Image (cartoon, rainbow, N blue to C red; front, side, top):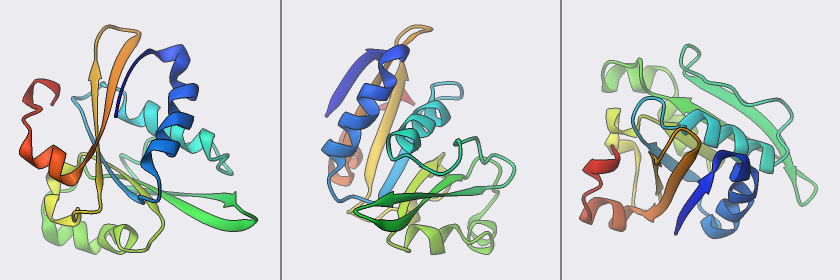
Length: 153
């Protein structure tokens, strides 16, 4: 699925994203610095009516948000791997536990730990088209690994 939109339409795209994502829980967000990964994740969290505003977990590594779905309390983990140096550090922070928890995990800079993402993960490629316009592609693991998106990364 692909969306091209102006940033003011991001809330609508976020709702469409969750419909397109179906029952997927692990999302790997790809894009250059400043592409809009955190902004997109904040909109996705807002669409789920999380209990606090989503913000960048660059320093905390993992932010946890709560939301309710079908009268059940659920969690979203927003993870930023940018500052992590190696697999040992990634393991020590609890990232792998979050990814395997069954809760929604929105992971920025997934190239730091590609081993975290099995075939059920969906890949989100964000490309700035202009200062106020973005393209978001939601891809299966197979679509992502068999196509080249170097122009977007």
